[in-house]
Length: 162
Image (cartoon, rainbow, N blue to C red; front, side, top):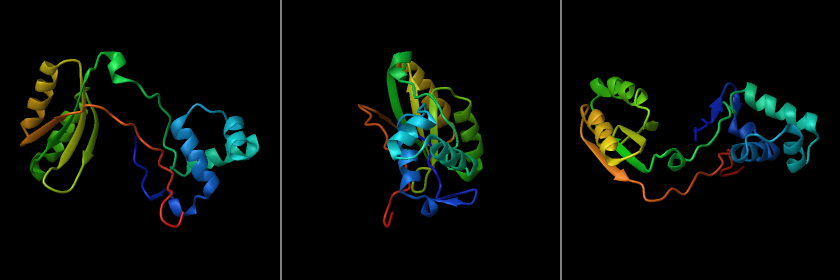
């Protein structure tokens, strides 16, 4: 899931009211809901709900819609988290390799000892080894196999004072 920054195109999380946050939660769980159904669930008319959704899209809070696919259903039975510690000089090239590797499904740049964290889905251990080796050219890697994922929660901007 993409992380939404606190400020995108002039819209801040603080400017979102409870209804906006409810709409965001609904659409993150069920992105194919119609404006009429969103309105019904949050207590608005279809035109009012659709106008709010359009405003959230135009302001950059909603950045797109996508299908969520089960990797195991595609034969990608191995899920690993790979951490890379690299140098600033190697960072751009490591990001290019990760972007060109289909098994790398997400990349996050982090602070601390590691520089990058990759989510990797592979059909078998041999392919995971190849992916890890391709990333290890840029520095030490640590690989952890994922035993079970627990999903994600909707990002609504609700926090202290919300």
